[in-house]
Length: 355
Image (cartoon, rainbow, N blue to C red; front, side, top):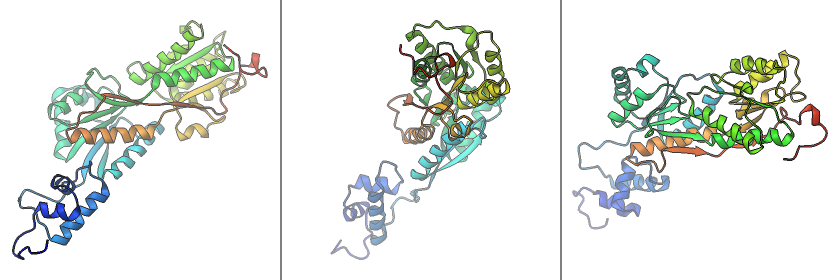
């Protein structure tokens, strides 16, 4: 900078030169772009301060924190709270604010004009993108968001008709198959299924994984052992009672989520059926609460926090005009084996049955 007259204003090129970056990189750093490393941004800001640089355009403003909205039907769910944990952590890293909002009334979501008004309210409040967490009946809202160019990412979508919808989930099919195979390897042959609602894509995929494991083992699907209803403890309690009251009750049950599994264990306790002595139970989600049950719950681990992080990264990239490489992202699952599963009573002590 030596030799510059004191009356001449420093330029963006001067800032870039002082920071050791290109002019384009300096511009991105000043405008809060996320594709700039933090140490690079710090060098650019230091050069700005040292040179006393001021942009020549009157429209320029210092970069402001962006805002996204996380929308869900319920917040008092272990599943939702764990997704939100990852979502909030990713937003903090990206210097992004999060508005956690209950979803609009279902009548709003089902009405085109009302959905458009709701999306417009989000945009006017400064929201640059929306993450829907297991949001039911979102089609009108998704269409309204697409109409105004508002990025919208669904986590575990429900009732979604549009194949263009961007979603984040876990490997539901593989997870449920692994859960069922675990019971088969222990020697169970009469295995029940209590899953989530048919409108849930995740619930359908999990059921198909359960069925695939049975088919692979040469076991025909017994529809009398299959139930589905909302993801809730009540669902597990009601359908657990029904399955355990059958003349040929199952010796193992795979549940569509941890809440259903907790309900099944409660039903078994109510009916005097010991777990895992006479009934093995596997959940899905592996929320921290799975380790609090008695006995501790064997469960398919899905990276709930990771799903929240991925949703934030995807919606912010879309806000920057970057199309996602895949519209349907699935993160890997694994099985966490705890105390709620064991060989069935008839083969207990003989070790896992081999197929």
